[in-house]
Amino acid sequence: MSDHVIEKIISTHRPRIDRTVAIPRDEYARRWALVQKAMSEKGYDLGYACGSELDRSDVAWLAGVFDPIIERYGILVPARGKPVVVAGSEGGHVIADCVKASGAEIALLREYQISDEDYRFATFGKLEDLAYRLVPFRPGRPIKIALFSSGQFMPHDHVTMFKGRFGADNVVFDLELLRLIKYEKSVAELKVTGVANRIADAAFLAMLAVLKPGVRELDVAAAADFVMKRLGAGRTGFPTIVSSGPRGRTVLGPATNRVIKKGEFVSLGLSPTFNGYHGIMRRTVKMGAGWTRQEKAFMEALEGLYHTVIRATAEAARKRLPSLSIDRKGKKYLETTKVRDNRGRRLTPREPYTFIHNTGCSECQEGYGAVTPYSENRLAKNAALMIDVAFIGFDEKHELVFPIEYAVIEDSFWKKGKPIGVYNRVPLSVQDLVGKGLVDIPEARVNPYHKPL
Image (tube, helix red, strand yellow):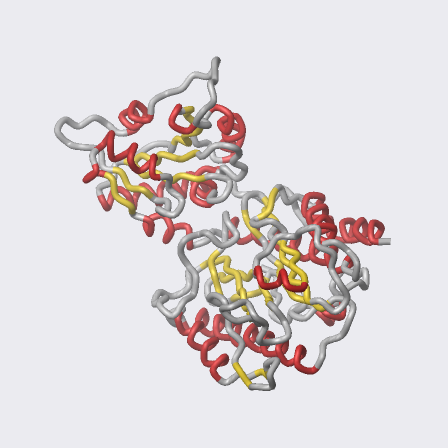
C-alpha cells in the first residue's frame, strides 16, 4: 500500500517541478563582478574561499560547485578576471564537471589531494605559481589576500600555507565581504529555492504516509529520500531526520534502526538540495494516538510562536524595521506564554535557537542573516529565509519537564521587496495526516502563509 501511495505522490507532484530551473551562467559573471568590486575597494588582490562536503556554500555560490566529493577544495578570486577553483586529483574530476555551469576555471594543486595517496599520472600545479599568475606583478608591492570562509571551516593548514607564502600581514579574514553579497538573493535564486521546497512538501507527504507503530526510523527516512531523488534533488542539506521517543532529545538526530512505538513523539525533518539550493520541511507528530490536553497545549503554544514570528517578519519587511524587531516580538510572546509541565507548574517552554536563519547553497550555514537580538540591519531586499520555531521539553540534565521531548515547525519563505510568502504548502499541524496516505495537501489545509513567488 505504501509503495503505491509513494508512486502516486511522485506522479502528482512531478508536473509541478520544473527541473530546468537553475542559475544561468551570466549570473555567475555578475556575482564575480560584485565581489571583485568590493575587493578592489578594500585593496585585496585575491580572495579565497574553501569548502568540503560539509561547508560547501561559498564555493557553490561563486562557481556552481554543488557536488564536492572526497577532498577539500577552494576558489581563488582575483581582483580582475575569472576565478579559479582549486582541487585535488580525485575530487577534481567531479569539480571539473561542476564548473561548466559557471565558466570558472579549475586547477589541480597537490595541497588539496588526499594526504597519503600517490597519483602517478596526475599533473599538479603550485598554489604560489597560480596566485602570481592571477595577480599582475608589481615590484615592491605584496599580494594582499582576503579569506572569505569562516575560521570554523578553513583548515589551519590553508591559513598557514597562505601566510607562509605571502606574509602573515598580507592575509586577513574578511568574512562579511562575501556573506553580505550572498545574503541578497537574485530572482533566479528565489525560483530555484521554490522548486526545492515543492520537492520538500512532496517528500514529507511520503514520510507521513508510511508512519505507523512498528516502523523503523530509517524506513520512514527512506521514503522521503526516495521521493526527493525521484523529483530531482541530488543531495540533502542534512541527513534526513526521524527521531522518535527519547531520541527526540537529540533535536537534530538523523534516522536510525530504532523501531517507533505507539504513543511516542516523532520529529521529522528533510532538506532536499535542488540545483544547489535547499528546501526544508520539519514537523513533530505523535505516533498512533491523539494528543492529551497537556500535549495539545504545548503544540498550540508552538504554533502561536510561528504565527507571531511570521507576522512580525511581514511587518519588518513592510516597514523596513531592523530585523531584531522580529526577535523581540517572538521573545515577548514567549514571556506571556505558559504551559503546564509534568509537575503541574505553569512554565514557558524553552526555545533552543533563533527563530529565523538564512539559507541558500546550504540549509543554514550561510554565515549571515540569522535574526538574533543583535541583528540591527534590515532584512535583505530579496531573501530566501527559513522560519524555524521549536520547543525543547527537557532540561539541562536531559530530564523531561514537559511531555514532549522536542517539537518543531520549520518552513522556508521568500522576501521580494516588501512582500513575503511561505514556499511550503504543508499545514502547521500534520497530526491528523499521519498514516492517511495523502498524495497532496487539501486546499483547506494549506499553510495560511503560503504564497507562490
